[in-house]
Every structure is written in C-alpha cells, then in structure tokens.
Length: 144
Image (cartoon, rainbow, N blue to C red; front, side, top):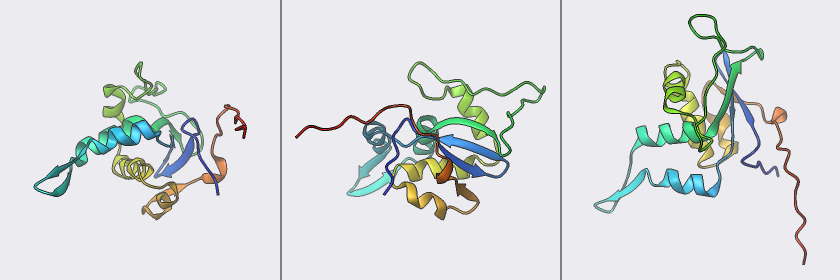
C-alpha cells in the first residue's frame, strides 16, 4: 500500500496538460467539508465552491504533457502564482478555469478529497502514480 504525503506531487495527465496535484491534509479536507451543508435533514453541496477550493488547494503545477512550459497568449511562460497561504491566487484560478480541461481537473481534485485510487476512474484522466515526485521530508521513527 502506498501512502502519499501532502508534500508529494502526483502527475495527472488530462488532454495536452500534465497537472501536478498534492494530496490533501486533514485540515484541508475539513475545510472542503464546509462546502457541504445540512438543509432540512439532507446534504446540500455547493459544487462551485467545492470545485474552486479543491483546485486551489491541490494544484501545485502545470506543464505540457511533453514537459514543456505552458505559454500565455503573447508567448511568455505561464506561471501560476500562489498566495501567502501556499494556495493558488484568484488570478491563477481564473487561468486554470479558462482551460477546457478544468472540469476534469476539478473532478480529480475533488476525488483527492475521497480516495486517490479512484482518480483512474475519471474518463480522460490518467494518473501517473509511477512518477510521483516524492517529498524531501524524512520519516520519523516512532519510539515504543
């Protein structure tokens, strides 16, 4: 069984793009859960808010499927900026949501809210689990 750390980067291939996404921490999962409310005894999900938060938290990078940098309309390299919280800025989110692949990316990020292994079940999404960029953090042995 593999365990992915929040500092790991999982390559997800969608269309002509390779998105690098990170597993969610427990705190991030709880924050996403706030998008689900109970109304008259039934769960009501605010899907737009859920999608936006999930992508904002999970997405750590994007490049062409061949490893090339993505270019803006004027040919400059496209860089996604993160805010002080480490999440994508609103401007970066707008760029991502302007991509045709954004719906599949949103679904992949929401699946991280549940289980990583189910990502392969999304049509048009290929998860490259063999090329996960592992974190540099070292494991700490627990003493008994």
